[in-house]
Length: 112
Image 1 (spheres, rainbow, N blue to C red):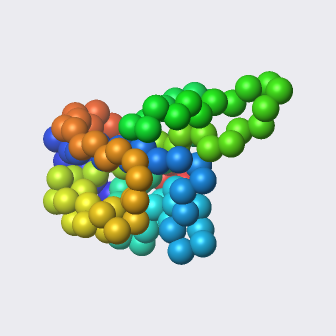
Image 2 (cartoon, rainbow, N blue to C red; image 1 turned 135 degrees about the horizontal axis):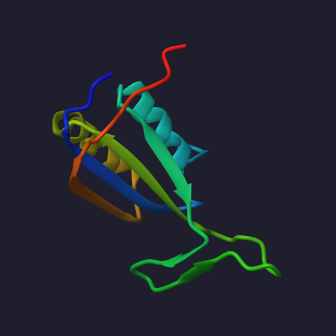
């Protein structure tokens, strides 16, 4: 799969407890990205953060995670990202979505 050198980076900031149709939202978003033929998607779990409600989310030794931040990153062409965006409107009820231009330097897989 080829990504144009001038691609787009979509970042979706949500909480670990967020759900979509009884499934963790981050899993639903990754599965949808695969179904829609996106070049790839990665979910990253944060260990500390806060959002618009200023509620601190943190992982401490004496306290198990309660609702850690999750960031989903997707890099692809502008056209494919733009086709994916409308799905986010209904799925992401609370969170932050950003979009920025990126230079794709390399995107390749082992051919074995």
